[in-house]
Image 1 (spheres, rainbow, N blue to C red):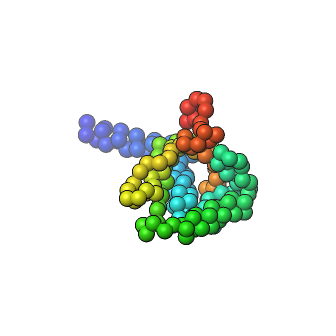
Image 2: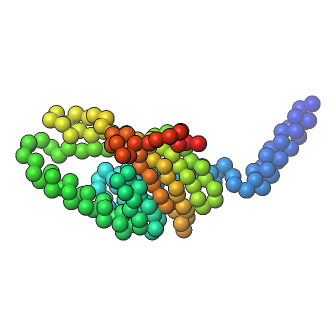
Image 3: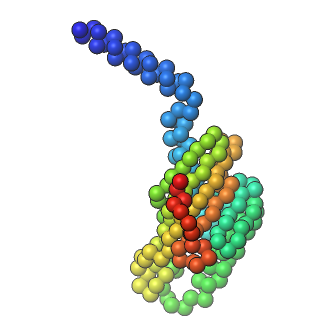
Length: 183
C-alpha cells in the first residue's frame, strides 16, 4: 500500500511537471511580467513626485501617449518637456513663498491594479490617490484621486507605457464617465 502511494505521488508530480513545461505561458512568466509592470508604475510615480523629467519620460515608449485630461502629449520628448516645464513652474512658485514653512510636498500612490497581458502587449487599470501637505501646518491630507487606463508594450525586454490616460475626480473635465473600467 505504501509503495503504491509513493508511485502514485511520483506519477502526479511527473504529470504536473510535464504539463507546466508544455503550457506555453507559465505562471512564472505572468508573475514576472506583472512584477515588471508594477515596477514601471512605481517608477512613474517616483519620477512624477520628484519632478524627474528624464525618468518620467523613460517610462513611455518612444511614441508613447500621455492623455492627462487637458490634452494628449505624443512622444517621449513632448512628455519630458511637459514634466520639465511643470518642474520649472513649481520651482518659480516655491521661490515666491515667504511663509517661512518648509516646502510643501506631495506623494502619489497606486492601488487596485488589474492587468491583462498578451505576449508583448498589456492593458492595465489602477486607482491612484495623492497625499499632500500644502497647508499652514504641513499636515498630510488626501487631496486628489482618480484612476489610470494604461496600454503597455514590452520593448527589448522592458515594459513601457504606450498610452496612459489619467482620470482625476477633482477636475471636472478629467472625471471618469461610464461603466467599470476594469472589465
